[in-house]
Image (cartoon, rainbow, N blue to C red; front, side):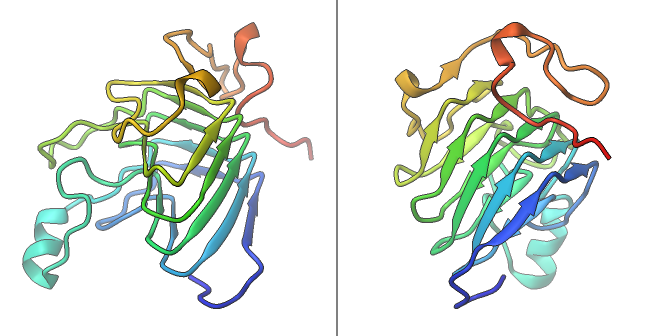
Length: 184
């Protein structure tokens, strides 16, 4: 959270693996009045809202109680610009209640991890109508929770990305999208 700063936080070439958070975004939270640019990042195995029942009882907090939060949570009055990222095997991909966020050339594939603590199922994207999603491959139990994503600008497809051990898609259909490791 960086409040009134006009320059977005830059998160580039990062991997977020197997994080747990008792509250919201298990990998990244873009808190109210913040901006973030997230480029070429990998999100795998992250579970948010872990133990949310206890948080609710102790602190009176609840957020996305039915379906839970994604690996990335964008709060109201915030903006995320997300490009060439891969989200897979998380408890949900992205929940975004922000303003005019953009998701471009990303893979959202089977974000279906569960800890059994919520009544709703996991989803790929839970974004409001102000978000722009383009050039993304999206597939899961619930691909578009809000029914706000333009199907003509994206691929809602069961085509398996065929990830290798570094989560680079081997499928010829996915060559221009998603995360790629950076050579050292």
